[in-house]
Amino acid sequence: MKVAMLTLAMVAALALAAEQGWYPHEGGLLKYRVQIRFGEEPDTMPDGWKFGRVSAVAADASGEVYVFHRGKKAEPVVVFDGKGKYVRGWGKGLFGNPHGLRIDRGGNVWAVDNGDHLVMKFSREGKLLLTLGVRGKNAADDKHFYRPTDIAFSPDQKHFYVSDGYGNARVVKFTYDGKYVKAWGKHGTAPGEFNTVHSVAVDSKGLVYVSDRENNRIQIFDSEGKFLKQWTHLGATQNIFITGDDEAWVITHRNNIENITYDTLAGRIMKVDLGTGRIVGAMESPGHWIHVTPEKLIFIGSLTGNVFRWYPGWLDRGLGADEGLRPSNQP
Image (cartoon, rainbow, N blue to C red; front, top):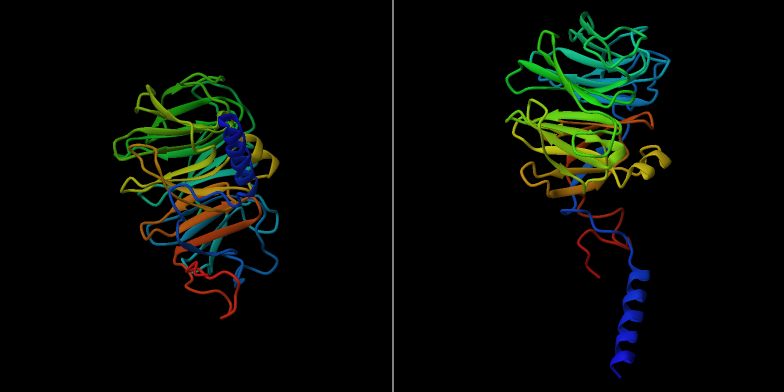
């Protein structure tokens, strides 16, 4: 009798599993709406301009939005106002393969080029101020990178960190004027080792968060590179953004195989509690890069050739009175 009841329970459990539908959003659904072609609808760019693959996007303190892309039909850096109206573009001929872009508190624009192994600092108008690395040459020393990916600034703006990246497997620390300080990391799977260092971010305490993408984890270090802990529950993280008030946001994928197979299409935006790593909320989005403004606007740079502008909001009804599923979930 007990065996029969156990068998029935197992059959029922299997049947229930087979009928399960959409997996719930981790931490609850983030209630945002989206503008899916920011910068291209309405089209205010010069005639013939369009995005190629968008690798990065960032907004400065004035609200201007910088799009870093790989297309041939527009300047590689295209700047818009907060509503998506074209302002200016620059950078033609400067980049081998655009990858990362961040803006520091002084309004300087830092571009990471993983094609020519460079990190470059620009004024907001595109004047080159500093170059790190040697164009077209790679190595793992204090003068070179090997396909770097991202940059992050210490809270006191005395240092910055470069994730280096696709060829090397390390994080490199510099003084703010570009002097090499140290590097840590090597290829591998142990703590402090990396397999594709794809993003780096720093919190208000100076802790360094590193996306070890192909190892499906984020590793956390002190400012000198001492390993502290790791998060292994967020999947293959493409990009990390930590706001000034220590909100952590990521654009991530279930695992590294899904990420590569779907070419970043099957991503999720997640808000993460910085102290515990707990997922606070999630929502679907393709994406390679994430930037969150003080107003909690979320900008996503997508290799689909899009910039997504997510803004707080949620519909209270569908397209008509007779739609099959109402947001209130009433029968």
